[in-house]
Structure formats: C-alpha cells, structure tokens
Length: 204
Image (cartoon, rainbow, N blue to C red):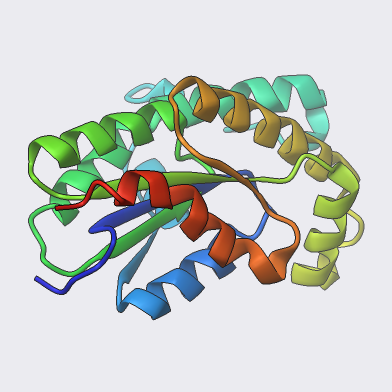
C-alpha cells in the first residue's frame, strides 16, 4: 500500500470555508483520490423521494428565501444527520481500496466522522477527520463573491453557513475531533497537518 499518514482523510466544514481547495491540495501532496460528498448527496436525492427518505428532502418545494435563517440551519443539520449512513458507506468502500482518499463536504457530520475513525481503527486502517471553521459571515460572503461572481451578494446564505460552521465546530469538539480555523489560507494545509499530528504520531 502507498504510504500516507492517513488512508482516508475526512474534511468537513460549512459552505464557503475553503474545503474543496484544501482537499485538492492535500490530495495532490499524497497522491490521493478526492470524493466530493456533495456529489453523492445529489445522486442519492435524485434516486429517492420525500416519501422514501424524508430526511434527504427537507428543502423540496421551498426556496431558502421562503425560510428564516434559523429554519434553514435547522433543516441543514437535519439533512446532514440523515446522510450519516452515506458517509459511512463511502468510508467502508474506500477501506477496501489501497489508494488513499480525501472525502470532503458540507454534510459531513462530526458524529459520522468519529464513527468512521473508529471503524477504520478496527479494520487496521488510518481514517482521520478534521473540520475547517469560519465563523465570520462577512468573510464567507466575500468567499462566495470570489467563487460565484455572477450570483450577487449572498449575505443570508453566508449567515447560515457561519452559523452551521459554529455548530460543526461545537460538535467536532464534543467528538474530540480537530477544528482548524480557515484563515489565514496560506497556512491552512500546514495547520491541518499539525492538528492531525498527535494522532498520527501513534502510527505503527
């Protein structure tokens, strides 16, 4: 098996905090395969209905503009929790492959990540998880403007994302998983490595 300080690295965080760029960078450094969990989410939604899996279809028929920010956050958390079995399914599949993988996405919960780490340990593989945090809605608004210049100023979306980021950070701490601030971006990859170092030091 190709050596890596991790066999599977899970990168969680809210929308607009830089997860995808980080995943690409770390995967490139390790020769790893990238799994974008958001693609899996859309695939699962496409082959299910609200009657079959109501937890995956909370936003069906209602645009975010019709819901309060608090309600959008509540539904986002509920959706993420409903998707936890899918996260574990990806990890279990990747555990059968000798190529390292990075799994990143908005809907990756600390609870699912913690369970994946435990399952990896049982399988004799090194599954690690880290959550990228950005709690400043203004910074996320600027990130959206840079990433999606044709979408206008997305203040409300950024406010929900910042609130979700705070929730993820609290949950990650509860599950003893590292949380790393997204800024400054230039040092994010190295700071993620430092955050993972305590557990990686135990690698045989």
